[in-house]
Length: 191
Image (cartoon, rainbow, N blue to C red):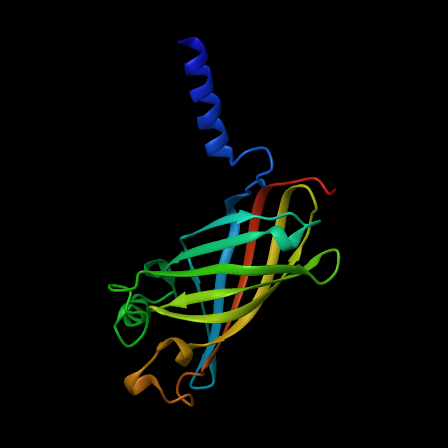
């Protein structure tokens, strides 16, 4: 009976860890991590941020092709510094956050551009629409805690954001610049 219990415990541990060959998963540290965006409205730069997001990251800098990156952003956590503007973004012609409260990114490939620069390709899903995106990022450390920073541009109209009276790009620019800074704990040592 003890052997059966031991085997079940080892099997459960293997399932949880994915076995000996599984890649380590890093932990996103909320303190110090952020996602911000900027866009122009009637020629004036506007910026905002998201207060809640989470990531599932399995990243090995020495073997980036084996990496998987997933990110989920709570669109209801948008902060623009104005309750009126935040309520506007929740409407169906913008984020439609009642029906689509989350945005997500899932990597399909990750490659090194040099020792500290990488590129993730994947699917960005906003408002129920998925598009291929390329997200370049820099890595500040190779082991332990690391800071990952990057930026990319998206076109809001590709995702049906800002439709109806807001479609005119002279009122609200189509280009939205997204910046991120993630603190990750648990990068594996280089091989």
